[in-house]
Amino acid sequence: MRTDRTQKMNKKVFSKRIIDWYEENKRNLPWRDTRDPFKIWLSEIILQQTRIAQGLPYYLKFVENFPDVKSLARASEDKVLRLWQGLGYYTRARNLHACAKKIETELLGQFPDSFNELKKLPGVGDYTAAAIASFAYREPVAVVDGNVFRVLARIFGIDNDIASNEGKKYFALKANELIPADRPDMFNQAVMEFGALHCTPQNPKCDSCPFNKNCVACLHDLQSVLPVKTSKLKIKKRYFYYVVINSKGKLFMRKRAPGDIWSGLYDFMLIETTRPVNLELLSKQDKRMSTLTVKSLSGIYKHVLSHQQLITRFVEATAISDAALKAIIKREGLKAYTKDQIENLPKPILLNRFLKESGFLE
Ligand code: SF4
Image (cartoon, rainbow, N blue to C red):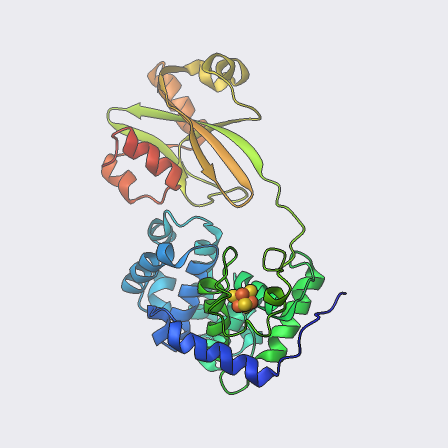
């Protein structure tokens, strides 16, 4: 393992300087005014892979609908997923719900109060456990996210690969070495906020930075090199043809099964291909098309997930006969839904876009 080549900075100096910066520059966010582990947990799950501006309305909506862990545990999965709609990474919502149920039934509604116990909850990894433990209970355990990697890598000149397990461990050790026992909550918030607002990936504000006399990246012009990340995520392309069957103003949908993206959300009958095709080819390739009369084919809807790109078109169709419709419904596990019902179903945002643009939903 490579080590940092820092200009040695005293731990106290580092934490005081970054906390001072935080107190002057922090954004006022609702989850920062609370020590309630439920609300802190909620905000952390919502903000994973999500920008604050996007996550904030979801946080407010969730707190309004579910003021405590009990109300969340007792809600239906459809309601939780519907409120989550548009935020993506739906596993987070399902884990959130499973976790609330576990706390309600197995832990008598009491949130675990230590890093090690928090990590036993579904969907709670090192990062979230450290955030809850330090913000709610002031346990001195460091949170390590992308912002923390960047700040520490630049200030201390650490060039370990943040994509490797070894690198991640090194940064976690470093952050835990630096965290002060008396103000772990402030320290964690401060490093993350500093990375989000000041030491940003592009154009860090080095001129006005309290660390610019000590920061290795600044002194050696390495801001664009640090942190080091070698692995590149492979994005898989998937081609979706959604068959939208309309019968007397109702659309046929089904709840997606576990094992693929969007489990628990509602979508249409789906034909997936390995490359883009036209209607003629689609009909040739998939014999399910033979019992349908196609009315229209939509333009392309693109949707990017963390490691998949979905290239989707919607085929509006009717069944060639009542018997054919019955057979399709049975085979695909579909049910007819009215406009109002569809409005309230949890759906991938991609489908929501299509339903609005095609005029089915307002
Ligand atoms: S001097 Fe620049 S690179 Fe270094 S911590 Fe400050 S903003 Fe980041």
